[in-house]
Length: 279
Image (cartoon, rainbow, N blue to C red):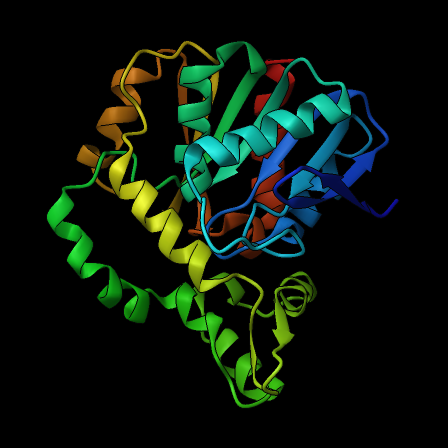
């Protein structure tokens, strides 16, 4: 059964999401920066029989609204709270990738009763970043490989050629092709580029720098998924998670920062095993 595209209408934005509505146990899937809900299609299909799964396009991404401002963690959490209320969920399991890993840690700190368990997939920027680093953001925008897919590109073929060089599309599987195609669009001037907006990019980076992720102990069962070629390879990077997440399990998986796209079979089994232990 394929997921169904749904829309939550809020006063400020429209939040688009994919829903697999076969199982009963609530499961929320949150993508990382510049991605969209379809990155979870393999995991969603794999777990659909047992879980009621929802994967939103976060504001500024995919098919959701793209406001010119307000990309705070507070607004993102309010979106998720409204989505859970729409679904009638009192609490849920959460799988969160990259930037959303920090988002979920903040959510767990504020509303721990909402989260049954957390799977953090190679999360980034968990600390509050020093303010002087803000001057380096324009450089990061130019050199971070996954942001090179934003464009603009003269045509679709040029965009696809660039995408095939990126880590998240290593192997260029059917799943990866579908994710790429769903994340790009032709602009009004005829060029091609990502549905992810510059306003969202800048707003999220500013928020990531300003707000610390982990500040108090959190006792929610948590799995930290550490890809072999991911960004968290050093002990100092893992230290804040080991310090504040008091019910933490670490697990290494093959693949890079996007194991659900590059090694989906092992990733899916890893998540399934953790969730079964925490139902």
